[in-house]
Length: 438
Image (cartoon, rainbow, N blue to C red; front, side):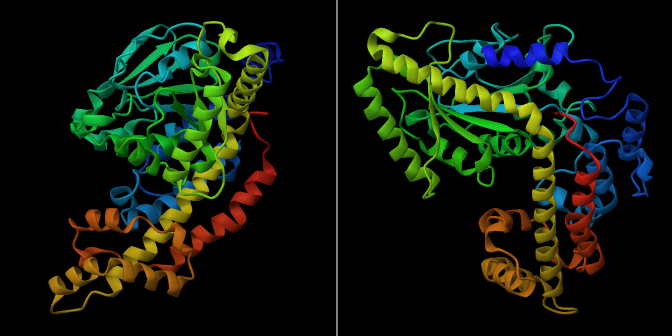
């Protein structure tokens, strides 16, 4: 906690560098960038309006990437189109785990206080997704309200319907740490007989949506809850592609002695190896993130020293989030651009395979049935990496409501524009502007 406090104090002591917006945009140009997103037709944005890396990403998105997304309906298949708040939002940390693994207590421990609407107990207490953000006063905002606010990056959650939005809320409170980072507290992942009870919304889809937006994902485990249920396995599977953000935390580790802790750690690594399917060993942080002193009677002096080192390592990761937020935005932007390119190739290929006159229904059904083979054809023709392609079954399911004959033909000029953006525009942007979080 000392490290986080020092970061906050250092920012307070830092000399003012003028009235600058979070991402380095001056207030005068802030209203102008909002107008970029307000106009529906793509237009040329003057380069003089770009005052930071994030402004440059906004400009490239509106001029080059968004037209390709709209043409091939990327927003219907994969992800809604980005808004200004998606670029300007603060870094977010999401906590995932089974019930009573200490997710809410972890946030309370970092803030040194409870947030509005927080409930802590041994039973499943958090029954909703709660985003803890900075605000002028302490209040809880319902999900339906927060999803339609233009200055909040949660408009994409409307696709999960009212059933989810009734289980979503935003807790706002004035706090120096929340000026730099927001936290996403999630409901406990179900296990045993409870996981057979269907939730009223797509829990895995929601976690996947938040995973794409968050800068860090903490998977919390309890020494007494090491089993990975079917629902937890699906949730971890939905984090595919975000491996660099995941940190595993063995919380409440002072509840067992040193010998038991060694066995618990080994069992956790074995369980994770079965689920993650990677040859590399996942880094696991061991600690007890709550307001109580470490129980060194069970652990001894060596265990206490281990806890302090592990907690310092994890807090150092959290401290680096604001500084790395700009790099993370660029990383997510490039990932999105590659995904849009592959989606465009797939949709263009399906359009090309459709007959001009007769037998369109049969041809479409054949393409859907042999979708895996069609993916391979696109991969060979365009020389694309197979790991970048979407999940076949999920894509097949989304295709069911579309008429392939209405799809757009492949437009090489638009693809080339995105390639130029990735190869030239983004590197030049990074040369021109430094990281605004340094």
